[in-house]
Image (cartoon, rainbow, N blue to C red; front, side, top):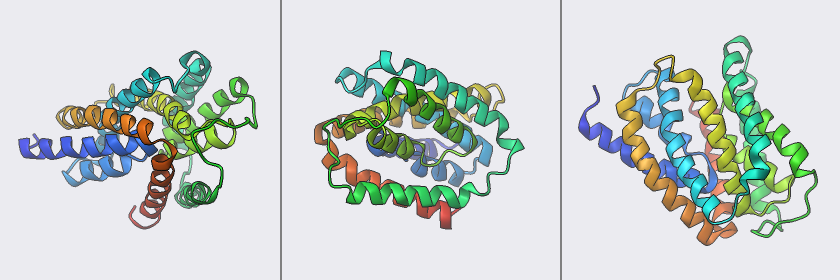
Amino acid sequence: MLDPLVLLALAAVGLLAGFVDAIAGGGGMIALPALLSVGLPPVSALATNKLQSVFGTGMAAITYWRRGFITLKALLPSIALTYVGSFVGALVVKRIDISLLNIAVPVALIGIALYFLFAPNLSDADKAARLPFARFVPLMGFAIGFYDGIFGPGTGSFLTIGFVMLFGLGLTRASGNTKILNLTSNLAALTIFIPSGDVVWPAAIAMAIGQLIGGYIGARTGIRFGAKLIRPLVVVVSIALALRLLFFR
């Protein structure tokens, strides 16, 4: 049984994680170490992190949608394939060797950080898409959902850069659409974690309360300040995730 003061601290961590995640992704980088530090076993920490993050990501997604940055109808096929990809990834994770991802993912995250740092034309304005949205976003959703099911770190960054580079979305719209697919991949993983009894519910509920507040504030902040806030925060989060994966595993 977790101490009430520990639960209060976890709620504060959830608020911070929800705020960061709503703008640039990477909230798990804050929440997961906190769950491990209070003594949760790794699998329970992963499952609890997935559950608590659903609340912040869901709140952020609703906020972006209500402000007109998400067209749900256009995303429905992508939502379905993201769910399938994440579910399949969670099923096969114990059957494949993912050690290569320990190096490949940090390199990719540093590449994303460099792109967001130096690309001259990143803004909230939509650009011409390199690929048809309706045909290829579902494929991206499946691929990144599968990655989230087997590994996870950087999922939000990969989705955001995909929406920007491949489909021409402005940064705020890209962030909003990312939240929908990230929420979907987390829900898919929970269909395995919850029946297995891996979620520590008191910790999940405490952090979920913080996530709801942080997700709402973060989404409103991202919408208000747009690319001038999202761009540097994506750079910081991507580099921090890469360093954590390389040196603090």
